[in-house]
Amino acid sequence: MKPLEVTEEACVPVESDIDIVTARMRGRAMAVQLGFPAAMATLVATAISELARNILLYAKRGEIVLSPIENGQSRGLRVAARDHGPGIPDVGRAVEDGFSTSGRLGLGLPGVRRLMDDFEVRSSLGEGTTVTVKKWNR
Amino acid sequence: MEVPILKQGAYLIATIQSALTDADIVHLRDALVEQVGRYRALGVIIDVTSLDVMDSFATGTLQDVAHMVRLRGAETVIVGIQPDVAFAMVHMGLTLEGVTTSLDLEEGLAYLSRSSKASRSR
View 1 (cartoon, chains in turn yellow, brown):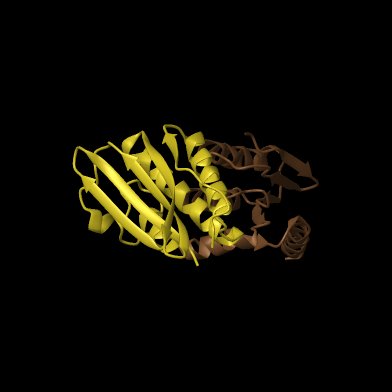
View 2 (tube, each protein chain N blue to C red):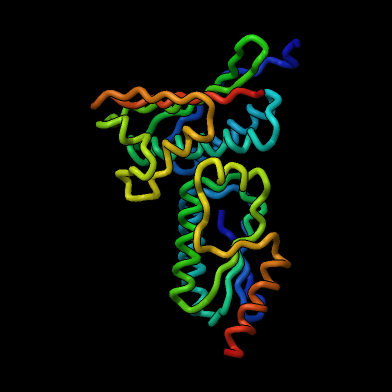
């Protein structure tokens, strides 16, 4: 299968709540461009919305990087949410259901994990956090 | 982007027309809770047909609206959750528990009219 067109990596800076909307719209558009069905594109957009909000909430600013990925016949989309904020003291707890230090629902990271296929958090205290998630179109 | 709120009889109808920022959703919450009193409304309908994503913040804030409006003596119905949005919400574990939902505006109005008749005859 030949790719129909080249989809390029996109970087969306996240500094205010309008950027959450911009990031998830760019993500949805990329998912659609990569041939994802609409329902899967909505899963991706929802995950991006959560990740971008986490950046604002915990680090004030950061970026969402959207990249097309390939693995053999499968195409997918990678979302990396990066910030140089305080870092997550206990990554294990942050991905547990019901845990939140923001006083909100606590569904953020565990919810994102359920929406996507691959999920990875790298965080070091004082340096920042990168959450990388992938969704495969299969 | 501000969400227009229409007064129709004893009901307030808020129709979301595009993607909303978190600040827009909070503004909508406060406007509805205030206007229930100003217009002595018995019911509130929030039409989310055009909302692109219902994430944890949107869901939590709409749930807050429903509970706050109930404390003010009126009822809230969320209408128009699209299939893809419902799919994503279920994956996330967002259930809108304790909040009435209807298929669309028509069903939402029918629900409110049944429910306010029932409470008047009590």
